[in-house]
Length: 106
Image 1: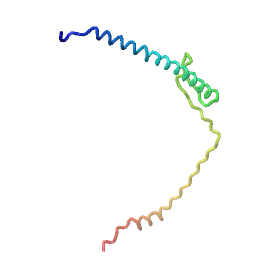
Image 2: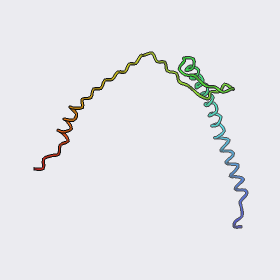
Image 3: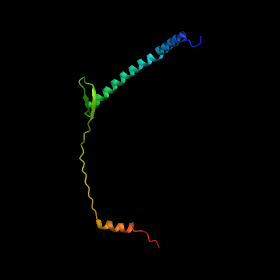
Image 4: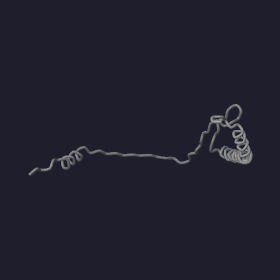
């Protein structure tokens, strides 16, 4: 019969897909969850170390979750800036006349 749906083929294809998912994707998802937990622990340790060293300050919500961060950078040096500019208007005008004069056409 043309145009009819092969329900057995669809059912067998679905079972094969389910088996492949169970064999490959489920263990991969478990491994990913374990790795995520390890990374979360390491990240938490790093963040706590930065906070205890006084390098950062975290902004937390009412549950204690970090929602923002402020970086602290201690400054211990004094910086002095000085500038001196002297402008001589006469010498500038003479230079302009010498360099901006049109070339002699002859």
